[in-house]
Image (cartoon, rainbow, N blue to C red; front, side, top):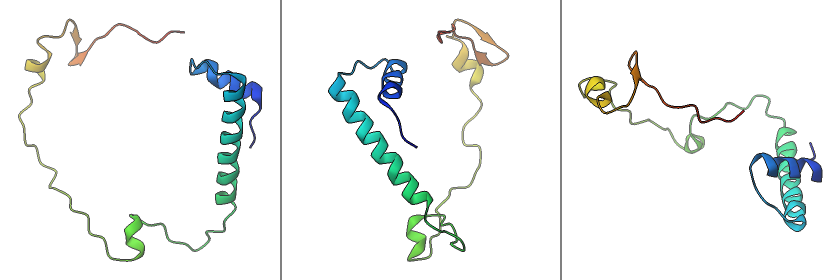
Length: 100
């Protein structure tokens, strides 16, 4: 996969970034280098390689220190929502902030 300067400009517009021509060209080079690296990684044959649950598991046994999944606090939803301007069915209602 390879990007063009037009695509970099479009990405910049979507991200609301103001980039100079030099910055766009630099970004193009960096992103295309990244995509080349991803393609190299994807081309490696991993047939028969067992996925690791943790990077350290390749050299030693890993036991995860997990705490018991138990309720440790009382349900305080109503108390927490008293100061909210608007609540419906236990959910905070907020104004729409996403522009179309």
